[in-house]
Length: 181
Image (cartoon, rainbow, N blue to C red; front, side, top):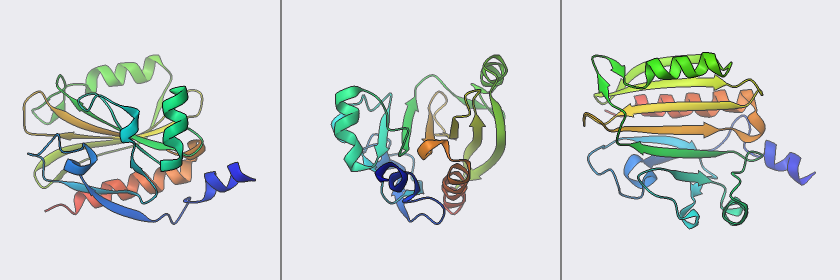
């Protein structure tokens, strides 16, 4: 019964909060003045001791201790991983990882459910909703920083790989990014 509640507690009609990229990445990206909306229940999992230049995690606060202890991320209740890449760039309307990502998708029998390109206050964005061969969902948002080899990425893993929840949160992240002006 508790697991069912956790899976459904912010499904469909979730509450959201606006988070600046600077706050999301714990102050590590001052030059990117953007924000987006994420599930209100998620908090920065500071206690994971992540390397801020590699991974930053946001999840439900009650999941942090278990994740710290086991190293397993909370797939049952979902989480967001953010990364600051020093080796992915954006040039001529394309992210440098796109060709290799397409190859990886084919190789691993992954399917792109939806793909969108747009600009958020002049920052190029690529957003994709992907399903792997095990049926797990991941929504990904890449944001070019206007620094040749730096890209920010956000990977949302919905609670229980719930497709409706994945679409809702991914769509909210994207629509809130588009509101940056």
